[in-house]
Amino acid sequence: MKDKAISNLIKKESKRQTETLDLIASENFASHDILEALGSPFTNKYSEGYPGKRYYPGNVYCDMVENLARKRALKLFKLNPKKWSVNVQPLSGSPANLAVYFALLEPGDTLMGLKLSSGGHLTHGHKVSITGKHWKAVQYGVDGEGIVDYKEVKRLAHKHKPKIIISGFSAYPRKIDFKKFKAIADEVGAYHMVDMAHIAGLIAGGVYPTPFPYADVVTTTTHKTLRGPRGAMIFSKKELSEKIDKAVFPGLQGGPHNNTTAGIAVALYEAMQRPFKKYAAQIIKNARALAKELKQFGIQLVSGGTDSHLLLLDVRNLGIDGMEAQNRLEKSGIIANRNTVPGDPSPFKPSGVRLGTPSITSRGMKEREMKILAFFIYQALLGRDIKARVVKLCKQFPAKRFLKS
Ligand code: DSN
Image 1: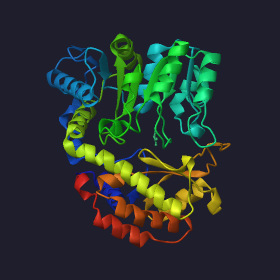
Image 2: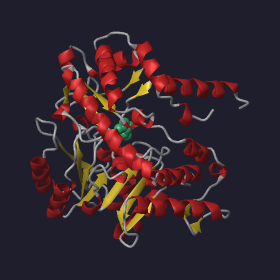
Image 3: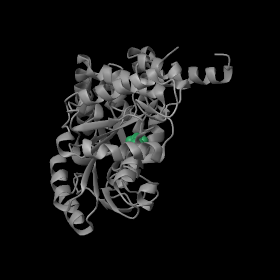
Image 4: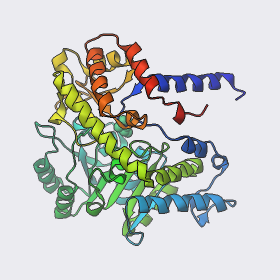
């Protein structure tokens, strides 16, 4: 690369990723093949519209890429193409969710989602997001154990009659009862939308319950447990797909990022291969092992454990808050984000840290390493410097093979 400034920063970022442990639950390592697709000449092409119906010429191969991505997406999640459609153009998760609301709601209509402070997402109706400003947002919570309060979901749904009920969360360690959500949505005539961004790879790997039998629309990003490039997809029942497609383009976006679509197609191909199932299962095994070990150090976990790729630590009993925990971990080369725990009064002073295992599982770590990692996390949270040992562990599980040189 002639631009030495950027080339240097890429090298530095690669080194940072290699020499730290990434426990951010929404991050992962995309494969070298995916990086190749992202850096391919597909980045040069405009293709507003959909395959066979583009506004510009020259899209013969873009059409093939997008059709292949769509076909693979339906196949991976075992969906009948006569009943389900998928749009692979959303630029990321937030625009994907926005497109669904834009397609299915009128201005001022009501949507209902989990509170941010209980593990929901900004785009599920938080007041600072357009989704909470443009539409009337009703927010449900979790109970004292950190489990979705389904009674409250039902009560609020009957009271406010939302048009969309959203399930699928960003900081929720347990299994979600999609069937219950669908039953409540049906009772009040609402659509059930599942945002499976965090758990898509686990669902694809068959190690987390699939939401599809109980959903009308399913959105997902492609870069979390699914281990693809940064992008998103919207699955919808056939009768809704025309509205969704129109909301994505021309409603919200211009030309799709064809290089990303190519990367998504590669990620879907990879997720269909046998090793991916093993990978998905190992993510959960690692999360459970990490939870067990951390608990032995007296660390408190929201809901007491996990059924997924993430854990939510409540660090108050260590005499620190989430921000301090995040900083102490980062000093030792462990990258994890501060997070609210249920009941936190403000997202600006959260009491917890969210940990996820997708990225370290991609590096090849297993239960044995979770024992070591739990010790490192505990030491770092106590303010002890264990950076050298973290770097040593990183060297044993190199990330170089994912990174383009
Ligand atoms: N930022 C993502 C996460 O960390 O969960 C969600 O958008």
